[in-house]
Amino acid sequence: MSERLIRVLRWGVGLLILAFVIVQVRRNWNELQSQSITWTFRPLPALASVVVVWAMYGLLIEAWRRMLAGWSQRLAPGPAARIWVLSSLGKYIPGKVWAIAGMALMAREAGVAPWAAMASAVLLQALAVGTGAVISVLFGGALLRVERPELVLWFWVGGAGALLGVLALLVPPVTRRLLALARLDPGTAAPGTGPILIGAAANLVAWIGYGVAFRLLALALLPDAAPALGAGIAAFAASYVAGLVFLVAPGGLLVREGLLFAMLHGSIGAGPAAGLAVASRVLLTITELGAAVPFLILRWGKPSAA
Figure 1 (cartoon, rainbow, N blue to C red):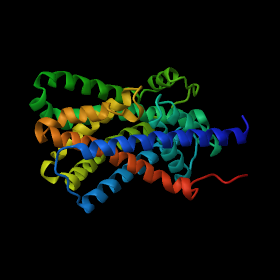
Figure 2: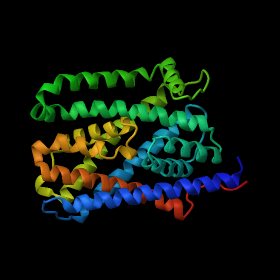
Figure 3: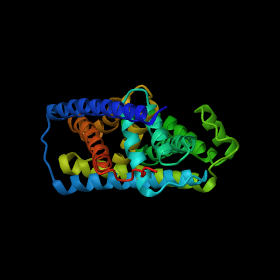
Figure 4: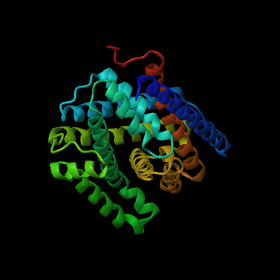
């Protein structure tokens, strides 16, 4: 495939992503304004929420770099951030494959084996789902006992299964089997225990960080209805994981908002829960676009032409 055709395809996909994002932000903003609740705006908690989310992005990017290093693939922080941030926008296109495809294309341009970039992303996604489920159980058990006590047992069983799944990834044959299911074949190689432990730890911290950012957002917009920190962490993690595993929803649209509402409306009220679910979507869209803008405008992290 010629470089010119690759550039054309990249611009085409980029414009398609931008269209989906614009439509989604517009829809979310209209829904946000339609909620019959009294909004406020406190700039410091709002800014802190954005900063925390960006810090979690940085943590996950470094975990991706460490996973790549497990396959002897080296990538500097700047190019790694550029690839991770820009390819992540692909999740707004239905199908869930565009983010991985974009990552492979940009990784090749940066001198990284495409299979290694994709394999590392697949492993981190699996770790994200497993650790997110564990975090949901650890922080959401009390919340669930109030909302749906009949599901507490199944909730803990699911969390235990997710934890076992995370631990199973430490076994090289299991890792290779997962990559084979994703149609990625690094041969007999595996990234090693160290990178996977780093990936699991990074995702655990990231889920807690995202929950903190969600509470800060609530304090900025609806301080009187802000959920408790533990409830916010659990609801955010559980809803985001649901969006990740529901493959047909671009960016987990509606799935994540629906579960976030279901987990919070009993404790903070239906109106605030619906408002925060939509506000959370707007926040993450803004942070993702904001993180991408420097790389799109200033060419940060772009590999130099040979």
